[in-house]
Length: 272
Image (cartoon, rainbow, N blue to C red):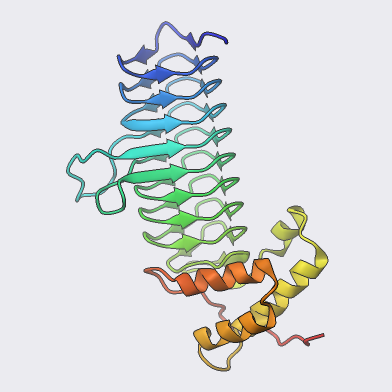
């Protein structure tokens, strides 16, 4: 056990819980209901407020503001929380807000996430594990982001939108619909431009799995029938393929936004 290091200029309010081995640098401010996990580091000028819990070994850089009240005009001071997982990297100027009564009263961020400078996580969002937000990404309230998703610099995601696992949102995109797992969306307003093939290759997906996803994608967004009819057709063809099922489950579950679709019909591919 190593006692936490707290710089003389830092303000730690009574009631805050600081884990063993944590390091709190100059001019940081930690509120009375904050829980800072073991071996976390606040570099300097970091503000932690509200009912915020931060997992072990997370590092937070200068001028990040974590846990202040939601940017929601309907917020009336209700008790809500922000929970950030272990081993996250939160760079300069990042802002994250707790939940509201309109969204379950909690915002949750998973383990091993990276938030680059000036990115924002709005109230009532759920961000999975191993997610990357590049500089200036803006995630509005009530959004969800799946594991291993990447959001490029300056991307903006409208409230209540969903970004599936392993998806890629291109830089400067404006996403107002749901992006399927393994999908790639680009543009303002964003459209589905294909699958995140490079991301899948980097994550070590087998060639056969990528080939199956490509076939399923072309069938899902073919011109014949309705989307839900095509979902059932793809389900019958790929019932044993976990990644394809994940896409189908995402579409079936639905949400408050429509599914982001391609600008053009995908080129047909043989069933071989």
